Every structure is written in C-alpha cells, then in structure tokens.
Amino acid sequence: MKRHLYLITFLFSLAISAQDLDTFFSKTNTFLGTHVKNGKVDYKTIHKDQSDLDEILKIAEKISIKASDGNSYQAFWINAYNVSVIKGIVDNYPTNSPLDNTAFFDKTTYNLGGKSITLNDVEHKLLRAKFKDARFHFVLVCGAIGCPPLINEAYMPNTLDEQLETQTKKALNGSFLRVNEKKKKVEVSEIMKWYEDDFTMNGMTKIDFINKYRTEQIPDNYKLSYFSYNWTLNKQ
Image (cartoon, rainbow, N blue to C red; front, side):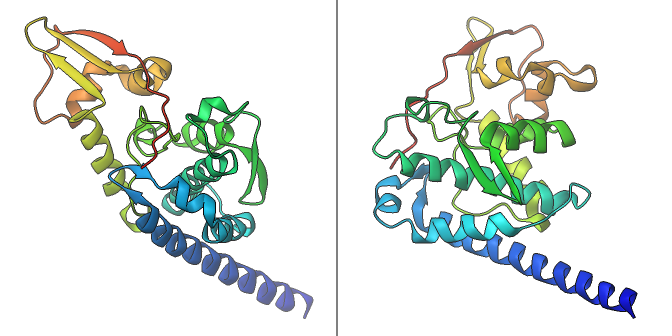
C-alpha cells in the first residue's frame, strides 16, 4: 500500500513539474516576444512593471529537471540564464553595462531550478561542463552589445538544436567576425579567445569551427585576431 501511494505521489510530482516547465517556456516566449526587438531589450518598460518577469522567475524556482533530459534541461537553463540577466539589469536600472554592477556574473544569485545560483555557474557548471557544446556561446546573452543578439522567443526543447544552429550561423556570418581579404586576416569576438578550448575540441582549429557555419569559407592561411568586446548595455 505504501509503495502504491509513493508511486502515485511520485507520478503526480512529475506531472506538476512538467506542467511548470511548459508554463515557464510559454511565459518566457511571450515575455521575450513583447520586450525584445532586433536583439535589443526594452529594459525601461520592464523596469516600470516587473510583474511578468518576476512571475517567470517564480515558476523557474520550482522546476526540477535532470541533465539526462537533455533538450529540456538545456532549453530551461538557457532561458533561465537570459531571463536572469534581464532581471539583474532591471534591478540595477538605469545602468550602462552589466559590468557597472559589482559581481554581476559571479556573486549575484538567482533562485532557479531549486538552486541558489550565479549566472557564471549556470553557464560554466550546468551547461558548458556537462554538454561540451560551443554553440552555447551564441545563445547565452550577457546583456551587452558584444554578445550575440537575444532572440525574441524562448528556446524550446523540440526546436533547440535548430535554434542553436541558426544563432551560431547568424553570428559567424554576421557581426561576430570581420574579414579583411586584402590583409588575409579575420577578426573575431574575444569570446573565441576567452573560451578557446570550446572552439578547438576534437583537434578542430578555430578557423575549422568558423567554416563549419560560414557561407563564405575563411582560407586556412588567414591570420586570426580578436576585436575588443563591447560591454555597452543591449538596450532599445
């Protein structure tokens, strides 16, 4: 009898958790669709009324999800990261840059997925360390112009791989790098310098990684350098 009751309780808790996750994705999708345009965030309007943002984060507190549930786990934590960045900005609004706020990435904590956790821990411990996927760098948006642009929809489990591919291609065929054919040189975001190991896994060079997603291939003999990261706030 006890086993039977335990099983019922367990299945009920799983159903509630799945429902919370669906609600989290749905409300995040609506929120981003309302407040993000061309990669820029309307922090001013969100600051005036944070109720929708706070509701999303309240739902995120209760969600329990395991890394073995790959796409759902990754989609949850990518969205949780991006929404928490927005929360961190509006809590310090007006501000010119996330770096203007002390320990924005490594000390400020958020209650997400049953944990009290920093943005750096979400990125480095829960995503990069577990999945070894360099495409995370093109979807985790740090609140600055130098980041890849924030999309105006949520990352969803059933479309996650397609969304990761799309954002990586957009970045590597867009503002993430600059090609100078006369000087046989390509300049890329400092992200590829800071996280070199992510872009050179399995014997791949950085040029190899870039060409995997580029429409116009970069010749192997081009010199690679880095342009300075723009930490100015990605506001509308």
